Structure formats: C-alpha cells, structure tokens
Length: 113
Image (tube, rainbow, N blue to C red):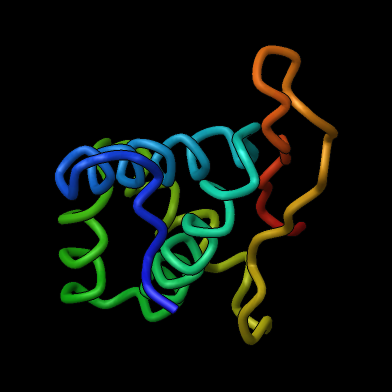
C-alpha cells in the first residue's frame, strides 16, 4: 500500500507533512482529518526514534525534516527522553466525529504520555 496522495502534488504533500509534524511536536496534539493523521503517524514515530537515539547524525536528520529550530530542541531535549523505555507507539489517534462542512472524519493526533 503506497502513500495517500491527498489530492496534492508531491512537493505540497511533503510541505504539508513537514508543517504538521512540526506543529504536533510543538503543541503535542493536533486536530486533523483521519487520512492525514494516518500518514503522519509513521513520520512522527520515526522522528521520536531519532530523538531517542540522540546523536549528532540523528539530530541533523530530524533537522532536515522539521521546520523550526525550537521544536527540534524540544524533540531532542524533552520528547525523546520521555519515551526512553517505550518501544514504539508514541502517537495516539482519537476520533472526534465528522467535520461540519464536508463530513470528513476528524481525529485528534496526540503524543502518548
């Protein structure tokens, strides 16, 4: 099963995911559509795994994806160590119902405590 295109060009989709994952780590929860959340989960989990590793190469790999220096610092100093003894599953999807305008299924994507 390939990546969902979400009606966007490759570059637009990449920018969307970079911005969304940055927002997720900044506020630790975001409200989005179910389709976007499902695509975002593996990306967020990979970045948390990099943060857990914590070396310079991991930091540079994460920096190439995130769009905000402060969020990168938070990811490596706060979020990564928080999941030191957890082997995966750093995000949770909570269904919220449908969006009023187009009935799209909405979810809350959040970091597990």
